Image 1 (tube, rainbow, N blue to C red):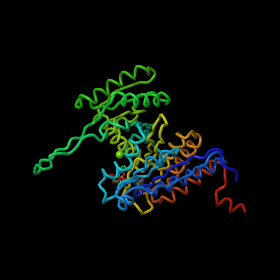
Image 2: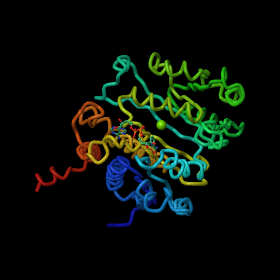
Image 3: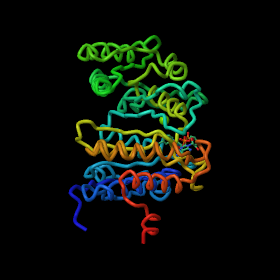
Image 4: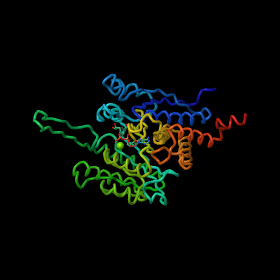
Length: 374
Ligand code: NAI
Ligand code: MG
């Protein structure tokens, strides 16, 4: 075999719980897509076993020089972190948020896709075309990590302050990113999620920057909606949305709602981007480590697979990303579904079906066909 024309060096961090199962599945699908590329590209994976087990051994979620190790990779393919026994804020800040902040992955893109064969809890979704992208500010806002706890010597009188940080530069870059995304879509509309009625400093700055940046995008329709009303809108009028830009916490909550509406948290993909490409970007399913189903082989791999698709897009392989998107639709339309979607397929069965769909679309005989032809 000749060497591939392009090799992507990817750090795989499966993390905890179902993170391991879905990253395995995702890698299998990505490797198949690479092998079907006829030598155009390949993945060179380095698996890094960081997470809650590593914490139990070392007292850290990743090595002290973890970011230096990651820095040389083309991208990071991440599962999930969090496991009973390690406080969630320790696991999240020790690994996932450490990477997002350390690599200034300030744009978190979370497409909400509606798949054929998957029943949405919304009746409207049966007859309405729904396709959104939630753009989450991923570097500041409510998850800036600023604040502290004090006065614990006062019996029962401890105080905690958690400060949200809104910078004009931070608001502007995420809004320009969201406007550019909206401009490239069929429906050129951007909805900003705010709470400036109650949060009169940070969110008012957010609104002002939104209006100022909007002036540079006269071709994009805009609106500004309060987050509580937006939660209702996701359910009642989903057809009115295209791209939604929101602060770190608001987008975190709304994107889980979006993926639940699409059918399951197990379907949702996410890209943590450093758009300037000064650092590697990180691709991960939206869901967590799902301790309730971990180790049973029933986790839905589609969120991780679609995150791999986002990675291919980022790496400049949009045609391959499209092929994977089509394969996912083929598999859901055939109702090869995991438990979370009302089916009884295992992670391995869905993965095998995805490989078969990819091969079929590429016109390559499947293993079974090859055996029959012999
Ligand atoms: P979760 O996303 O792990 O699970 C929520 C529900 O969705 C559970 O019922 C679970 O079974 C189901 N689910 C999640 N992924 C699924 C999949 N691939 N297939 C089928 N069903 C799936 O959220 P939860 O339970 O709140 O958190 C569990 C742990 O994960 C916590 O330690 C939390 O901190 C961590 N977490 C980590 C995230 C990350 O690493 N990015 C994101 C969210 C949570
Ligand atoms: Mg979340």
